Length: 533
Image (cartoon, rainbow, N blue to C red; front, side, top):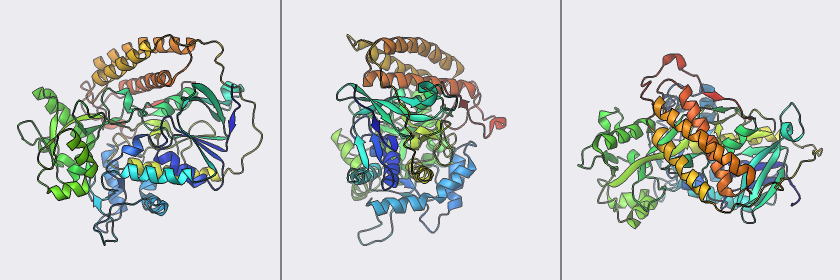
């Protein structure tokens, strides 16, 4: 067994939230950043639309606040929304200082081009063409690689958090670090730190169809819950209305910015339909657009609908959406001449580990930022392009809180390293792949865009049997990244199903046939599930 690593701050996740925090702390602390894949791989890399920020003189902070609260369907924490929106410009200026190059209005212009997306009443999405996430992620990663105090560990997936209650039998639970699997060598490693930060992103891979990359398996939420953290609002899974529908187009998102520039949703016969569902039509909040598409597909028995921006000039499309244009062309679709076939897919996890304004969870020494966290910012439905904003603002806020605790004590408890003496190598992996497929399929069929008690109880029954198999396998065999992800996804599925069963109304992203209306008595009431530990 290798010797434990010791750092001041351990950050699990190398997306926008994790790297922003690392860079904020790098001059004052010794930091480890773990990534389960390539350092740049994660949802941040694939974010297309942009970041919400008030820059236009015709816009206002209050308008951004109001739009966010409206989209959140009565569950946003107003104080958190105000805090986040007011910090937005400062966060964007910090990104620009780091070298992030946002799209401007013209070659000689000094003003940034802003787009408008669903739920927004103004143009307030600053972006880098249609690949904002890639620009932000690669810029921050280059900065992190160049800093001597930031130590990067690619291909390391978290196993479980190390806590004082489990390790030392203490009643006051404190996070002391985590166990992680070095995927390249199949070796469990021990990382010890007085501060651990979950920045692992969301859990879209719990569903059969998702816009998320393969790494989005809810690891941070599951690990935090198992360690004792409360989890909130996991029933609110956002399904992005428009993912490319093509057998070879795995997880490719068609940005909402197309609709912001006038793209229309059409049926196979060319008819528009969104005006029948909402006065904002294509610019309605995502939950409404996704349900409308789902409704029309089921009504007609169609496999997809179509997104049409061909009324715009070829030059406009190539300038504003070069990545999407080229990707569509690779599948034989010319979006300058014809509509794009699209379907909804699981996109964003609005719930997560409960935190305060500084990213602190229920466990001392453990923080959560980004999609892993539930801050109260998104409520029952995240407004477009508010996700990267939350990553930035709460990474900055967590950094300020962590800095107040420096210097850290050198009194480090003795931590047991990972014990694999009582498990054996697995002879075959077929049970893992089979269970993985079964889990994602019944979550899609029973716990998707439209739910019912009958569907939820069917999912719960299937999950109980599946978890027994996973627990038995986990206790008997050596761990692998696939097994760890399956275990985490099963925990995520349990949280989503139980949260959905508790909410006996339809609100935001949670729509159930048994309770199709909003229950006004439940306004501002979060669904909270206590920690598993």
